[in-house]
Image (tube, rainbow, N blue to C red):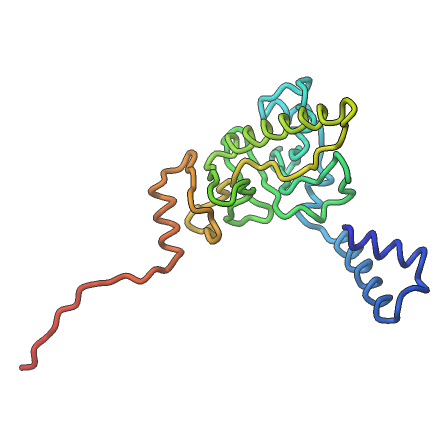
Length: 234
């Protein structure tokens, strides 16, 4: 987004300062950006879905009037997939406390969640770990979407309270907005998810550690020794 802003600004106000190569590069950046906006993607679907609908708060069991609740609910939107209503969750969530994200191009994953069954899928359907491990050496792996979303909302609500407090008094400043996902959610089959790059310690939540370890070892393709009988020549 910043690259596009810089390219638009220089093309609009100082095109004479660009070399021919720089002008071509700036035009390519702008063209690619607007081409991406025209494409139909899961992120665009989330962006155009119904935000702030009361059904979202009811499904997530949060009081919309509570302090921090509106900010906590920003990742979630109501969408009809043609057969039923589901909750869409976007990660990373576009920033809204400044600088504001004015489009959906920073969204990498969109989760479609049915709160009645607590089952989730990705748009498009895939098996993946979605979220972020806040710490480099450890992280939490969630099996339940509701559990994951609840912790995510709590983290966002707590951050919003801190953000409001940071803007008061003589030393007022805006706390930087960052990814507040409490870990990663298993969407689909764990064994089919890419398990590379996991932290050294994983807190398994709603899934057995044995199953996680088995899936990790299987994907690691570690060498395995087997016995072999030596046959004597006749």
